[in-house]
Image (tube, rainbow, N blue to C red; front, side):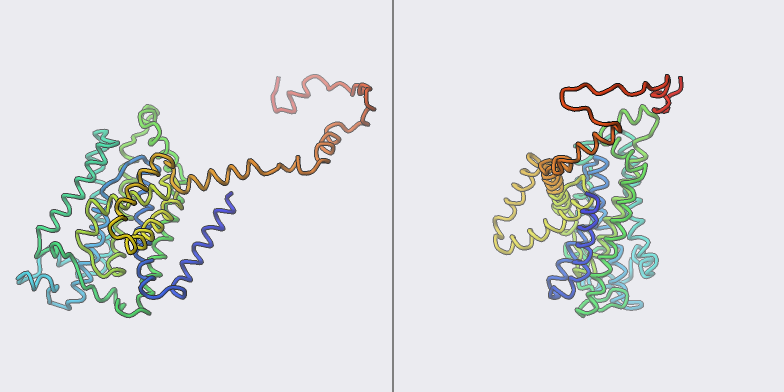
Length: 391
């Protein structure tokens, strides 16, 4: 089973590396966009699949990372001493103090991770200490996403308002209108997904990952054992937020635009639905679900623009009712069923039982109907010594 999973991962990696040679520029840009959502799915897998935290507000952290990167890119496009285009249109005469530090690329890249992580740490400390969980935490995180969008829309001169940050032209010297240089951005997204995947994979295998599962399945029991579930959940929630921030930062050069419509309540729900369909308990299932969901969303919305939303809701309900472990769970159950139905090695080779019997009793076999001669009696304590038990 492990070798099969490794083979699937290697095949997926080779396909991602070969995609620029196989896909036209427009489709490659779409794939890069879907991979950004796959990075978000890794964080949702950690928070929801492993920790049981139903996060309906990942769009907030996605937006914080995206706006941190977008602010730097807009300042770089404007040039030294100039204002971003939307500020000029809004009548802003001087650069706001909030924007000034983002002229530094080092500060902007750091804020991509720090802003979402610190926000999640503050929220987690306030919420998990009060033992808020389940549907209450889900509603709270969703309300945070709605409030964040209202804040962005209401500050036209500071955030771009409803339009957001648009017309991003360069990404650290790369011309985003040049297809050849846009491929470099695609490979950066693939690299970021690989790094985030390896971190999550190692976290799942660590002691913290096992403790996280124990908290998900029985938080009160873990607390009675002397652990503080609030600390563990807050830490993992911050890691999940940081991955969403990285995805948002890469989303800006991939798409060239970031606005409130990309990080509100509806996009946050879609991120969660994608992970649920793929399989929230499986790291590979979460990534695959994000890619497949967005692929279906793009393809089916082109063919059925008015019916895709209903199909989307029906698909989520069907998965929650009949496949709570998602497509990854169905695939795992199918492989297990196929293995149980395959003939065993002993049944396939009739001489296996005879050879094992001969090895068990080194003496000559007794003829049919004759009792086998008794062998020499074992000395006292031999069985105990063989099993490593002392009298």
